[in-house]
Image (cartoon, rainbow, N blue to C red; front, side, top):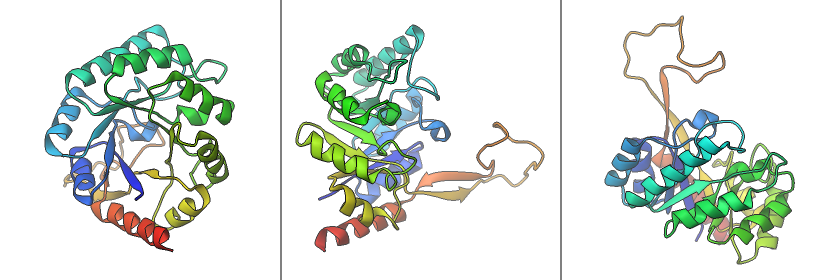
Length: 251
């Protein structure tokens, strides 16, 4: 059966993924920038509330995936702390300035993370050659899967690349598509890619509890998320996508 990993950034999203029957959650902060490392308190509380295995994003900042020595130290320390806290797995990726997978540094993080599971995240989509990047990630050893949109804005647009990655990877590593997966396109994605795992956010909005609302100010940059609308992973949407995937498998 297709395995569903849910991207979450809150306790309620984790609980919804848990109730829906997800196989894993990827816990992040700052999803507006593609996800950064969540706080220690968030990791602790999510782990205490759900039975679903928790993969923690290890990304010290938004932006590119070429890190200086201080940022690399932070990544190593976050991994050490996740291991101390009994986290199921971690998610990371590092590139060189030329757009290649930084094999030595990634190998150092994998060794540090053992025995936790490891996913190489969508830094993969910023690599200059997806097929060389595939072989480089495999050569590191100890990485269970690659999360990718096929180097496009969405999985559907990148489906041709993903299908080729699945073919080339064989049983050496799992290719897990993520990015723009919805109820409307999941069956088509599965037909085109032949993947066994998929990464979704299944997000919906819930209104803020604020009664007073200041229309003249926001807490982010000019282009920012609505101040009084909160995104959460929807149990109903997760289950809906699971049903759509099940129908595709039975066809």
